[in-house]
Image (tube, rainbow, N blue to C red; front, side, top):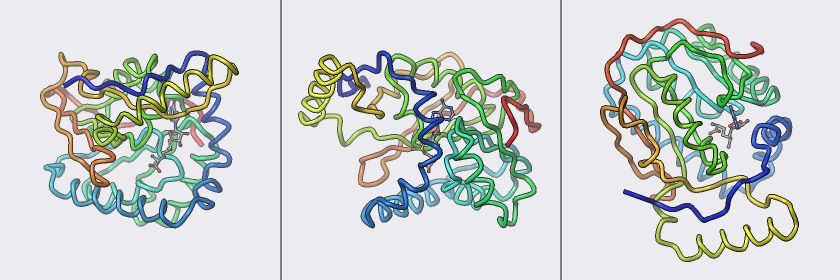
Amino acid sequence: MTQQGDGTDGKGFDQAGHWRQRGDRYVAEIEASGGGFHDLLRQQEAEFADLLASLPLDGVRSVLEIGCGYGRMTPVILDALPNVERYVCMDISHGQAAAARAGLQEHPQSDRIGFVVSDVQSSTVQVKHDLVFAIEVLLHFPPEVVPGAVRSMQELAGSYFIHIDPYEAYKESPLVAIRGRLRELYRRLSGNQLTTDWLHPYLDLYDRGSMVEVTSHPVLEGRQHVFIVEQAVEESASEIGSGGSDE
Ligand SMILES: C[S@@+](CC[C@H](N)C(=O)[O-])C[C@H]1O[C@@H](n2cnc3c(N)ncnc32)[C@H](O)[C@@H]1O
């Protein structure tokens, strides 16, 4: 299935720089957002927990969560994976990783959680993890770099790569295309980037060579999907590598 984004490109957008800085104010940003947005986050977490409980993930021992943010989804994932021995939270932002570390220090499995500050696009982490998650991360990569980012994430996954991103509900909407054209016009005229999130054609982006199967499940009434990419069977290690400064 081919899906088009909203047509806005990200030329000149410093994706890594934007998130390194924004990470310092992200928790405040979320706290300041309205109750409706908080309800959506809780709904997304509950739907994701139900989905994880229905998947055959008992064999998962090592997890890498890319773009962990302040650790919002980490307890949800840990609850669904009681046999995990090593859980690595990776984020490009020191501020986010520090907030995640602080928020998770009382978690009953905190002794299994490690923190890595690293840009997944240039990460030197080489050891695969049984399961790699990226929750609302890929939408923040401009179209030009998404194929490489998806490949990097997939390469780190020994068995599964699971991510949540906006997807289907916007697919047919003419408003999406109009919004994209307005953003593009603004960028051309002002030289500034107006958007920091995009829709991507995920199902077209996976490395078909190493992939066994991909499924997608609507969440938030279809506004987002959970993509589950099952990798070809391969040796997967459960030790972590270090891809950047360990917080
Ligand atoms: C919208 S937040 C989502 C955070 C968390 N997954 C959640 O659902 O609450 C996106 C996160 O991805 C991180 N991020 C953005 N670009 C990244 C990159 N190139 N490498 C690693 N993390 C990145 C950001 O710092 C931010 O914490």
